[in-house]
Length: 339
Ligand code: MRU
Image 1: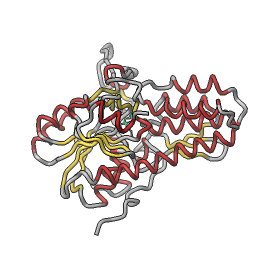
Image 2: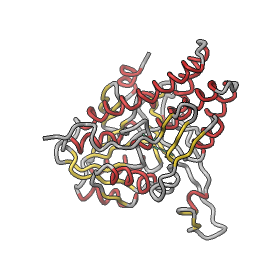
Image 3: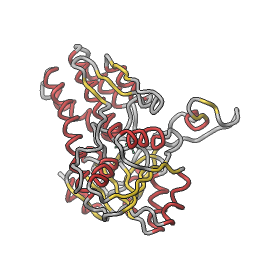
Image 4: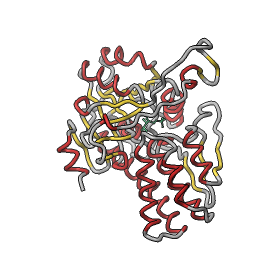
């Protein structure tokens, strides 16, 4: 008999404490489980910039709490909204959450109402993830193998995860028999975070080097690549962690299906195509060092874009809490997400 969907789900990394925000510091995992207490919006902004909290939905949720905390402390909200918005450029969930808070502020919401709004954003994300888990798992034939990229789990969301939520649900429903996770260089979200979540929640998985992905697909061990998203444009083009684009190309070549899993807060109908999505460039030092140790010769330079865009034509299914779009295009996106 299949396990219930709530199994394999023990992690909550963003926790409101009544007067401050507690974050599980993702920079230190898996070697240390240390919590950071953010006591004002500036500290939340810094935590988002530095990747102490990361993952598209999680940074939106953290930002919403940052605004609510500022209101609680009587801090002027306009500058808080502006600095939080600029913390990272690619994941639209950040802007979406701030716009939602801004709308409530414009409508005259007091601090208590803003705290309730932040809580609603967090609760709705968890509910969306559970729904996407069911919808995504239903697409997968029993006995399948899957490959995922980056970290899209409880750490990256309010809990349960997007792509990793589908994997949690698919394993619980005994549809997924094999799970592979790519390392996700340079920051190693897959190696450090996804493997930590999977081990902790008792989901058997194997880590692969990013460069082993095409070889894995050729072996026949995986039937789906399942990834999250940082921004989905109006035509279905999807920005996600660097390396996603090459996985989508390799999947198409090998006849492996490609699934994007993201809540509707990741859909940006104001952005026509992937060409318009700003790709975050981060410090080359992230690439020149591993775990704080310089691994590349002094004097070497590096280019460090941390997202790329998988075009809609390479995507077999976009799974959101509103439903599944197969072979996405502008018309199908408009039908589900147009006003
Ligand atoms: O730079 P990060 O670690 O914040 O990037 C996160 C990703 O790209 C995730 O795959 C994406 O946000 C989906 S998270 C549910």
